[in-house]
Amino acid sequence: MFIGEYHYSIDDKNRLGLPVKFRLDLFKGAVVTRGLDACLFLFPKKEWEKLAAKLAEMPISQSKPRAFARLMLAGAMDVELDKQGRINLPDYLRSYADLGKKVVVAGLYNRLEIWDEKKWEEYKKTSEEDSSEIAETLGELGV
Image 1 (cartoon, rainbow, N blue to C red):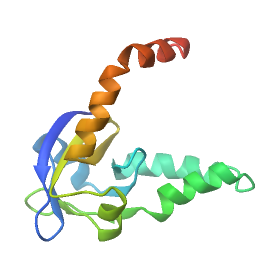
Image 2: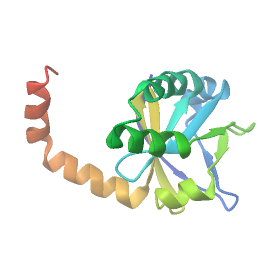
Image 3: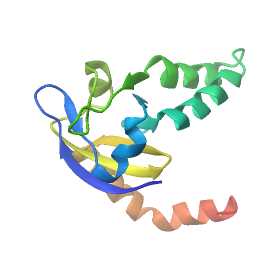
């Protein structure tokens, strides 16, 4: 399970270190792709395979499922951790998420999200301000 918030820097070779406690799961294989809300998603291979299978089952005759599948699948890339626990972020994904040098790696149960540090702080501030409204909506969903 991935949880927590971690601050890292991307080096000059587009490499990003990952939290030590998550590396074992990711050494077995990982996939990075375009995420939502201007971030990247990083999935362990097993979790990615589950999501990709669900995306493949969505109706291609409907525009929104097609667009979401394109966002996730066409942008995806297999990544391997090096001996120092770093991954290489492709330029097109770094550009998509507008990642600067300082980033936040956020653990969200079955995936990690990679955010530009400034965008993460803005997003977090807005979410915290709206937390009562968010909680109420989730209550309606049975959470």
